[in-house]
Image 1 (tube, helix red, strand yellow):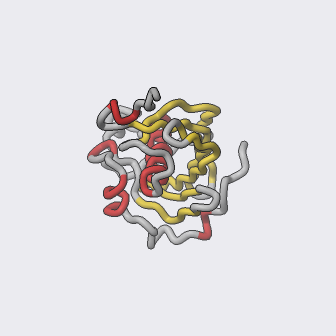
Image 2 (spheres, rainbow, N blue to C red; image 1 turned 90 degrees about the vertical axis):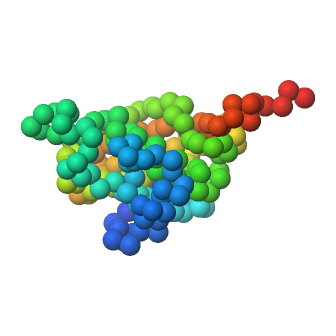
Length: 170
């Protein structure tokens, strides 16, 4: 199991740096795809970010995954981490593009289930940046002090106007 990227217990989750309304000013996801409740810490020297998702009893996946025993799907956990990394990339303009899209994931491990009613603490750290091309992040998720998932992801810039992302051939 990897070492935690940081000691997130030192941050005040009851008074986030960026609450849900502030997250919405940066992240485009809405309705059932909104998977980030707040951000409690940003370190722009090490490009580390800590946020959280309050997993409610009204999540879109509860009815079907699994009936009578709801488990947060792994892909939704990964989406939570991606939205945290996307917030960092967009808020601090470290990658470019209008959105941050998935470019890939590596070494993803799910270590324990996540249930409705939990607070999922999310940590992501930028590990590699190729400006306007890709950003690589390590990410981890915790519930009640236990690491429940981890991995690495690649984020790529997505442009509303596809021509805006093309390199100048000259």
